[in-house]
Length: 116
Image (cartoon, rainbow, N blue to C red; front, side, top):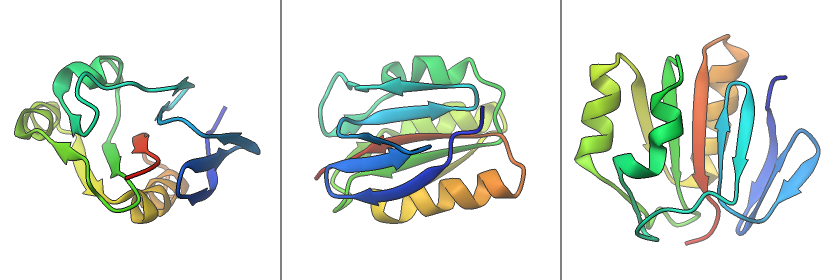
């Protein structure tokens, strides 16, 4: 199944016709709903263990509506070691970038914080 984001607004995201109101990760073949990070306003490598196992071209990180989530340097370095391009954007822009890459045929994963 292909997971396409239909819309996003503060506190919600619509994927394949289903509205989610908790942070989520979209992998090429499944969703991880209610994504919880060890530190609420920081993305660390431990928060993306399942993503590390994926064979992807891109990782799109949505850092919240206002972009208030910090991404540790370790996350970027580790994925770049695996030849995965990392895109860090506020979620207002990140969901569109995720869709754009998906439509171009890339294997992409998205991890989205929906508020802040």
